[in-house]
Length: 438
Ligand code: UD1
Image (cartoon, rainbow, N blue to C red):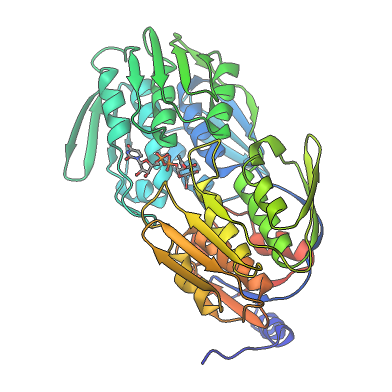
């Protein structure tokens, strides 16, 4: 049976021991979250934008870059390729004058799944690329067939052998018309990166419409690219001869914002989020309203006031943007575990995105999964326990549940959480949570 220590004792133990290199969060639950938080830059924007700096001559300065392990991994890749990269606070500066390599070692590729987004940029700029094939991940198989098919259509020669992709561009990539069978975010990004310096015009039909795609295109256009229709299902990219590095501010992280909203909601809190784009939250806002929360927002701030007891949310179906984001499914599910009534989830994007369910049940949640559907019967309260983050957003869900639970919750596997949330315990403590990292 898991032993529950009072928060005070854990805190004193930590102080005595100093910093211990084990990634666990100890959460003393049931504290109402109140106050203000500034949302950090979007991980899913920062990574493709950093990759896009490879296409530019000279220096790019990327501001509002979150301090996350995935961003560190991107910086490592850029340095390995020969770029000079300097990080100062939230700004990452990339100078490509010394770019000299076109291979990315397996070890660096495995650091993060989204490393595949370097393929289009490296091959386009260097004329060849050699990188390892990204395998499956915590969310189940993550094929890249759509990326490869599109890049081949543009003239890239791609050989797959021994887990590696050996790519070459005989002359220059050629613009063409590409129809994606699914609006894959990663494939759309790789095509844009490859097409920006290609010869002629590339048209992407059924393109992903995520705000992060718009951010990538905004950066590239500021560097001299000619990309039209970002945010729509049809993107047109007129290839240009050259791009020049510039300054760019990464958009706020809509998934981090949603996670903090669920944290406020489960604790009956009152939270003001600063530096958000409410438009990017258009599919999650109605869910909080349905749960009984009061929301008000202007251009860049959003306030959420939660009731004492949340109501169930009838149906949450994950869909490509502008549908409900798959990344917000797990934190939203954590919120509904303590809501009054039954909430239904349908995960349409990834096969294995319910790994947090078993861990939420350890905390006392009542959830049944049948294929892509999860049925959550809200319980009046959760109880602290020891749980392990199965993946990034699943880990966030466990933290949200721990904030709602009676007693102490211990969340391990924080390497996942650190990929997507900047020092999450600091943010939560700033608004009244009692969370410590040991
Ligand atoms: C997905 C999410 C994105 C999220 C990211 C991180 C969607 C549409 N995309 O982006 O919002 O930020 O995860 O969690 O919600 N697929 C193929 N072949 C391919 C590429 C993708 O079959 O070549 C399939 C995937 O297996 C998956 C679906 O398409 O079922 C979505 O993939 P994709 O949008 O590419 O995923 P990410 O770019 O990782």
